[in-house]
Image (cartoon, rainbow, N blue to C red; front, side):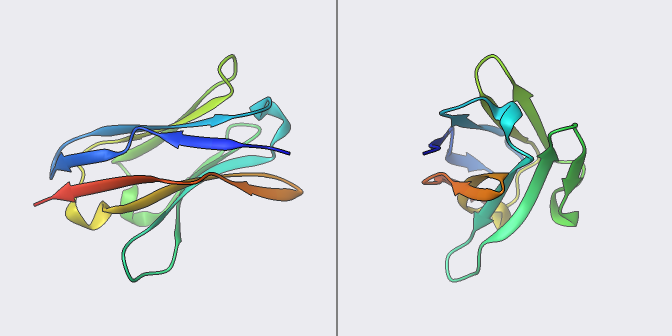
Length: 114
């Protein structure tokens, strides 16, 4: 069983920054890719950004130039650095790790005030 725990969410003003963490219960090297998703109130969950095992990063157009993803292998943790936050970035942010099966964390709330 794989466990993912997100943290780092909070309330921030528009233009501010946050760094989210996704800590895995096993080596992140064993995942084919790890990504971040978000779900705004009343909307479907959407993909935001992901990184493959070999380091290929893909972004949703809405976050290009503002969000970056990185990994700390020693800590089995993936980070989402978010800058220039907008109110439309508000939502619950989830980490997903894939290795044949998909594993999800419980989510962390990000609220961007205008």
